[in-house]
Length: 418
Length: 165
Image (cartoon, rainbow over all chains, first blue to last red; front, side, top):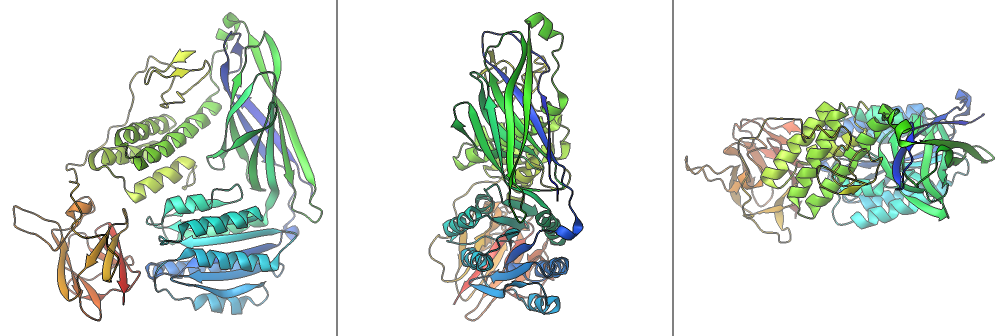
């Protein structure tokens, strides 16, 4: 399997004017995996499902989950490992981690799951980690998928601790929240790692599709432990780094060496184009074309002899006299469009912080501005939802759980259309 | 440097949106803020004190999903769930009007919960927007037994049933 990563960039303004003050510039960096994936060389997978079987899952929801699980088993090969843990007030290992050889028997065990009782997630999660670690795959992808529709009571911090331990051992976590009542803060915190994700599922029917997509992504992992290095010249500074495709998420950066910032970008599936927005401070520069920023993306290909690869590019910043620059004073619409979404995402996330702090007025103002940004970015439906929540917040001092989730996951671009 | 027209924060040249308030800093002649106008709900929800306690659960309690508030139900009682309407003199035992019941479509007389020694049932009182247990609509005027962990919905107001022996 040959892999390569193709990098492309564009900046917010084609030309910067000379100035005695520092200026801001935004760069959009797109990375296309050019991998030639052969169908016969799927990566082996070790997948452990953690399924909430509390009473609220009874009926349609659990049936859909069982259906989806049957399909997952169908899609797995004898190279893969599968495990299933359920939890309600306690946790059970329904299927210990094993090779997917006797599919009929595995499905029979899945069909036997019944819903009853309350919701206590941590023990289920701990058992899942134990099952995945027991196999200890050296080549391939290990993953835990948690599916819940509710809130766990009293063991939230343990859930986060267990999630972190797994993630540090390169076991990624996919957390699926069904309906609108699950504890988003907890699931988000659990998934707050580059190799993990949280999804919002509005109906049970989406489970099958979501499972299938995740499975495909895992099988086709193109690169693992992807890391971005940004080296800026002179007194330049990288102020922020955000992922914008396939979904919006801030990435934390550190100045690892003088003038070199790094950010962890997690694992990448082969089909995805990934895009990032870099916010940079350009110091006063003389007229000329400046190789302002050197970017390197280092990654590991998850194959037998996991070797490190690098893709690199240099972002040029042309600086001209103010008169000359004024002739080219247009903003790159593509960069602006992504920035507008990132701004909306930041605004809504600050709004929820303001709600937590009891500052309703600030929260409402931030939500309204997020609505304006999305409206102008053409996301009218989401803008409307935000406006409704803002009105509700101002009048009643609270927001609806569903509206909040729709906004959070909508601004991130995870719900349906991007 | 430039100043944001909306919040007056100092912004660097080249900024496209204010890093503080998110306002657009380009084409500044457009000063309007929010361009969306939407329907306004016609009533605000009063924020009244909780009618029931936050003590440890014994027997049956209902937990409001949106804020985690716990309504503890006395054993051996029949409780009407609904919204208070002073004009018509309707005062239910469990008044969900204080918990966003109006917006959630809770009827004035919505349902009846019967707590006995052994079991707990819910019966819909032909409410306009229905009573649901684990997303299944409860047929009106037919008591249905509730279990620990069930999801109970009056209109769209969600509660979790907790039953401790």
